[in-house]
Structures are given as structure tokens and as C-alpha cells.
Length: 293
Ligand code: ATP
Image (spheres, helix red, strand yellow):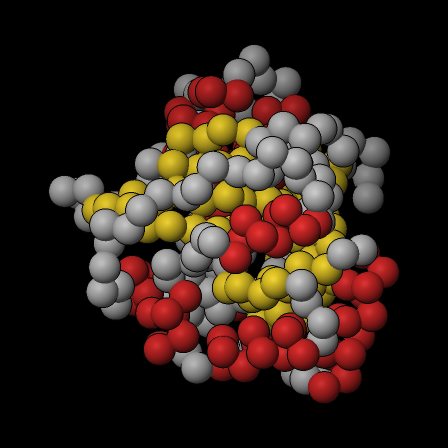
């Protein structure tokens, strides 16, 4: 890395629960979701240069657009336009794509959020979080929550955010059986859209109360996604067999998460799943807390 290059983390977004509560006339779905963000994710390096550049490395590099269609590039262009910064200095963006693509963990949105944060710093912009979230929302409904990257409840189309103070770091194993699922296909396949919202959160956030709360919530996208891609059911049963206290699909799938009492137990479970399913994406990680970390 050269002297002014800086690395930004693009965390995976995990929907611990996701209730679909309605559909707006413009076609967007209304949701209520408890989401957390993991240490494991993509990485974005931003460096001043003589001309703009963009490159992608990492396990999933070949699955994303390498041009202006990439959300990382769209984020750079949107910030230049929206902030009236057509003459902002050129930058090279290097994306390390570690997260499976179209997999329900918001990788593209998180990459865009990391680019927005990184460029605000690199260009020395005076833009507050509300304005940055507005620019992010113009690119994708999940970008404001990826900018926050804290345990939060998302409502509306996913852009009305309430950070959950005191939520602990969770030991998680992420598993993807190697299949991409189209978010639009899953939403189109929903049989019911006017489901109830999330129940109140538990008073204490220990492992057992969080697990009990998860048991009374749902991911309303899971049945439709499993019908489209039966391998999701296999991923869930592999997580359960490996000892997860709880397992569920994130977002529109196909990535599933298992909840484990400690990071070490999660690591052991991930190793076991990897040996059983060597071609799958498997990552043991911890979620970020609401306190800066
Ligand atoms: P969500 O949970 O928000 O629905 P996802 O994890 O299901 O997101 P992404 O991995 O963000 O989905 O990819 C969605 C689409 O965006 C893919 O079809 C992909 O080609 C495109 N895309 C553009 N840029 C990126 C990027 N940087 N990373 C991932 N996908 C990208």
C-alpha cells in the first residue's frame, strides 16, 4: 500500500430476522429487520492517483462487474455528482471481493458504503451522516444501513434505522452452498406480504435471550428462497448438525448464518463444515457491536 492509500472494511450484513410487512405502490417492499454486521467482509483500498481506476481481486472477483456497473464505482460517481464535486481528484479503488455475490449479505451495498466513507475522508468532504445516507439510498435501499454498520432495526424499505445500543458481539458462522439467488425472484415469489412486524427486543442481550427472541421471529423470504434453491435447506441443516444454537437464512439468501455461544465454538464448527463441504463458502466471524469497534 502506498503512503496515502487507506483500507476500508465492507462488512457483511446479516439479517438475524426479517419480516416483510407490506408493499408500497411503487413496488418496494416494506420490511422490519434486525441486522448485524460482521468483521468478515470485503475490503476496499482507496488511493489518490493521476486518473481514476478500479480493480477487483479476491475469491469472488469474477462474479462482479469490473466497470461502471460495479456498485463501488457507482458510489464514487454518485458522490462526485451529488456533492457537486465533478473536479474531485482522481482515485484508484481496489476492491477485494471476499463475500459471495447475490447472496443475501449485502456485499455490493457494503462495498458502496465503504467507498462513500473512504472518499469523504480522501477528498476531505464536509458531509454529515444524514447526507451521506441520502446519497447511498439513491444507489440502493441497503446502503444506509451498511454505512451505519451497527446492530440495528431497519424499517421502511430498509432505510429507517434505529441502532440497538448494548447489543453484544455474536459468534457466527456464515455458509453459502455456492448458489446465487436473485433478490427480485424471491420477492416476486412471496405468497404473503402483509405479515406482522418484529416483536419487542429482549430486555437483556445474553445468548439465550437472543436465541429465544430469534425463535419467535422469522425471515419471511426463507420459504420462497428455499423453494427456488433447495440447497439453502441443506446449508441450514449442516449448520444445525455442526451445533449452531440457531440457524437461519440472511436477506434473500442463499447465505445462512449459524449462531454460536463463543467465537471459538464457531471456528470449530466452521472447520467441520468446511471438511464436509469443501466447495461451499464458510466463514467463522463475529458481529460488530453498537459501540465503535
Ligand atoms: P442484498 O442482501 O442487499 O440483496 P446481495 O448480497 O443479495 O445483496 P450483492 O452481492 O450485493 O447481493 O449483489 C447484487 C448484484 O449487484 C449482483 O447481481 C452483482 O452483479 C451486482 N454488483 C455490482 N457491484 C457489486 C459488488 N461490488 N459486489 C457485489 N455485487 C455487485
